[in-house]
Image 1 (cartoon, helix red, strand yellow):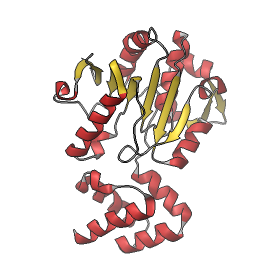
Image 2: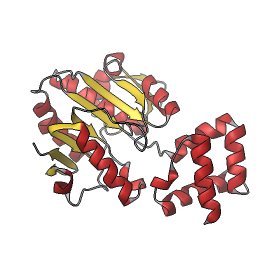
Image 3: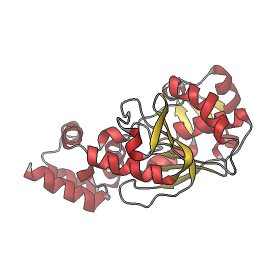
Image 4: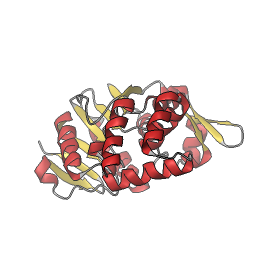
Length: 256
């Protein structure tokens, strides 16, 4: 355990990632799997490799920050976003939307497609992540077939261009609406006055104490009656504690 505590400090110094806020057992298992896969002998060798091998450092950072996503992930949630959430915020003055932990950009682009279908444009469509290389991939907007599997044939034909046998590129008309920015949920300040914030499948990796702190920060960033959406494994047990009320499956609304 002492070795792992040292590793957490070393990774913070080397990568700027604070592992003290993550669940130890889950994160240790992931790191140990990485060490075994890459035939490293110890935590110290891992840190030495991160310091001397930029390619290894980039791949490890992507692995550690768990960049898994796909378009229209969780159809139940996106149906409510389409039918109730977006129509509600489209009536507001200069609506602002934030996808936190945006990963490869599939979530924010899914929102942008739905907004285009509804014929409204927010004043800000923000996507943030800790991992800068993954944000660069998101800006390119090129995806494998399995990553767009949840997209209807109509949307694929309208908003994507097929590239080769197994890749799809999202149209510039959608990409140009999104602002991508590096942001550390644990350390950076939060922008305010959002009408909709999505932070899905991110909380599950953090300790309960850290989860509560992040939820409070997100609620502070919402306008009254703003919507907050989490992942299916991240249901908020006592939403009233944070000034929220349950709106639908995985979707909460800030009380005015």
